[in-house]
Image (cartoon, rainbow, N blue to C red; front, side):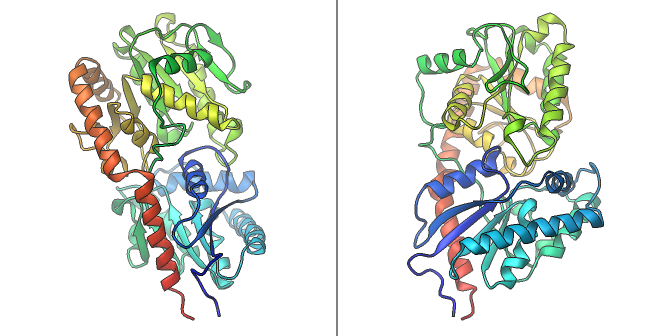
Length: 428
């Protein structure tokens, strides 16, 4: 007989990379905050398999309703299930009979039926998705339903992201959160911000290839005291860093502000095979800009192996920014939006996915109706730059909204309810 919830029970959070992106960071926070109710919380990182990650990255786009690449071939499906079997065996070997498992994102979903067959209680948390389901996203979910079981609890970041195929399943909504006391979110003085940014090469000419340096920065002039427009995200096509760069370069914004694009070094993000290509494309685009515009564009790639340095860099950039953007074409949630709002920064973000649960348009930030409209994006950014008092009002309201809805204390309570739900589902 399995007895869940007694002393010594462990909840295992499973994903495919230790660092890189909001999911890895969220799991790190959940597993570093000690106990959640009656449960110990632990982390399990799968083996790295580049072929599986290439396939699941294509699937990632399809789940967002974007036809990029193909769905898994029979050979890829076999590789995916073999990957799942290998990691399920490793995980089960580390578990006790009364443990619970939370799997994260499509890379891990194929592990779910194997754990269920072994008698464990399992939830799968899908951090991605689209609010505008189409034939592409439907095809992706038709593939994923191969691994869905009635006894599997599904977790989504927002009600609007639950796909039709999951409407009859056991679902729960848990919006992501930030830890206000984390290094990335703690208060910094103006002097500390200047020192951190100077240490990252934003106080003068730097031209270190962003795919070769531990601290990779491309910057030809100091940002000085000029306004900064910032986007922090992974180098993912759906984050549309290229669109941000094009919109900035084609507007009047370079005459009044600097653009900083910040994302993790692709070498540190094992499960994202597209990152290096996106970053290289942005570097080439920047090089081709007229010198007067190019000098106002800066690329920063913090090294993720130094967690403290990476966190301080992002913190300082967000606090220094006059405007923080998230021009995603599709977005499951957007933790960088939450981080910026906590720091009382005015945010311009796409009306996409879970971003809409964070930003009340005109109250806690500004929403871009069409993520592909670069001109409209530039106008919203300029609107904030031209109205410092209005920007400050947006920032204050943004901070209050995060404090009320999107902090770690709320998410820990949500997870404890999830764990209790899994326990109550056990039939002894």
